[in-house]
Image 1 (tube, rainbow, N blue to C red):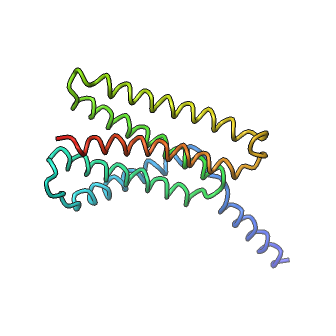
Image 2 (image 1 turned 120 degrees about the vertical axis):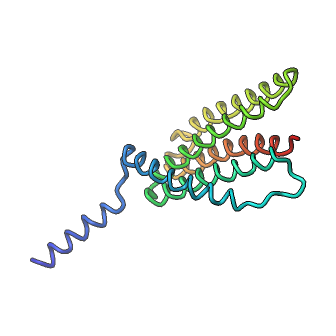
Image 3 (image 1 turned 180 degrees about the vertical axis):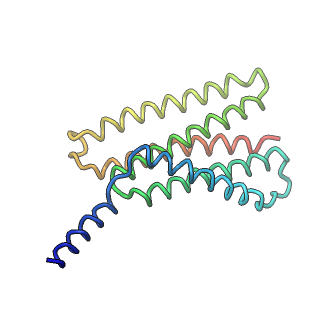
Length: 183
């Protein structure tokens, strides 16, 4: 009888290890992680050596980018470790894409302030086109994830959410590259 109870407790304990984390629990964890990661990211950015010939502005952008992406990418890693289910992976990928989108907005605003008034419309147009393309890609991916196209397998959704995350990161990398090369 004692063996059965121990086995039953073991089953309940092991199933709780792989249970889903609620959205509110994850939000609380991420807030805590973010504070820790921001401090570590700042420390890392301060250790970063200045590139020879880089302007002060370029250096500040590189340091900010290093710190920002350190936080985002480590939040992703921690979220994946905490909830390694298909749903958890998809939530982590989409949360990371959202974080990248916030960074895109920040660096886009910086780029706009650096541009001459007569050149701002070109940047605005480029940014709108990228955003429009991302929205169309989201809609397409939503369609492709439906059972009639994907066969209904939820594992396909991971590939699609990773693609959305990568698209946001690529937009961010393009903006940062523009900024780093400004004088």
